[in-house]
Image 1 (cartoon, rainbow, N blue to C red):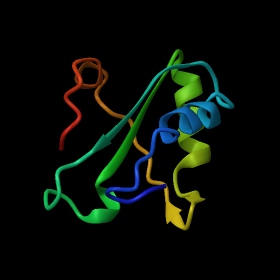
Image 2: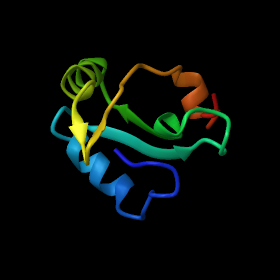
Image 3: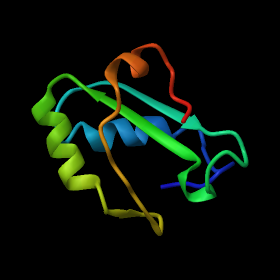
Image 4: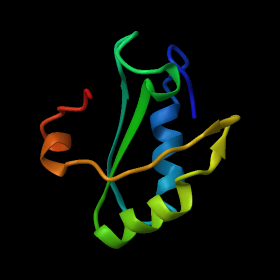
Length: 90
């Protein structure tokens, strides 16, 4: 969706709004991995927690592989305990 250094204050709000199409969003977080730790196309990570598993499954099915702003979105489930503890780094 965006590359390193391209995260703006609207990204989180816009992402949460887009994800609400699939169900109630509990929390949306944007995390940028430190430079050099991962390839640039994997540096900005967006985490979305849904109220229900079916909502998360719908979002993953619809968004994984889609293109936004010329970049392909890659989606996967993330450990909920790590998310809640804000342990988001790879």
